[in-house]
Image (cartoon, rainbow, N blue to C red; front, side):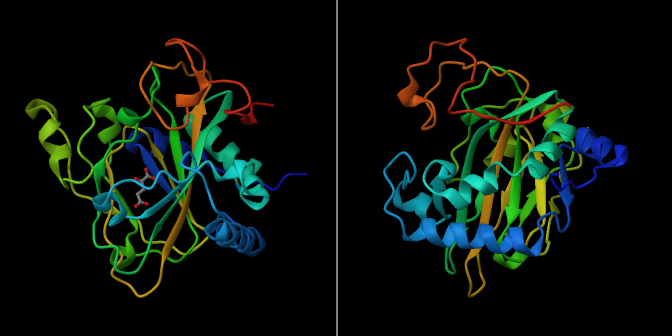
Length: 263
Ligand SMILES: O=C(O)CCC(=O)C(=O)O
């Protein structure tokens, strides 16, 4: 039987209301060791542009990014297909099914001097529907000084704003219409947590992670889940560009496997 991590009705309510949640010690020690080992292997592998986009010099000061590692490494595949994590995503999203959008590893090396600036994810994803969500798994203990995540509660209620320049910290807040800005508390909620713990956040939720000022890498694996059926909106994205999808096509099929389904 697959291991489970029980989610309470109160936790689902918290996620739905705030657009994020923190869950402690979700991975077992063995799962955490396997995920670290898989990521170590990937870091030794030669990856093509589709899996290691690289970005420009400014982007590389934020983190090293590797994408869709489930396709290139068996250990990463096992991690991404972990039914326990997908089932949590399904319950938080209140969906009958969740599919994989993509995974990525984000490693802030010591000295990576730039923050992952405040942003929403959904403006960069070529999806018609909202509601997709990320599981941000800490492979190291994370805290403010090494770049743990931070969220603005209820910011998912602002919907989908324009994509911002990710190299220009803070300009997301200028996009919030004044009337709505008055109704929200923009105090950042930082999410320090031990390795093997994670946060889930909605693609519309404002989030941020500071630079890594510690002497060790800050390693995270992010798995992004799409609830129910999501349609392609025609925009460019590294995960879909080679698929020649027509706008309105469903994001289904081999690239987007079902990871959890209501019994
Ligand atoms: O890990 C980070 O530095 C940022 C993560 C992020 O933006 C995300 O998971 O959407």
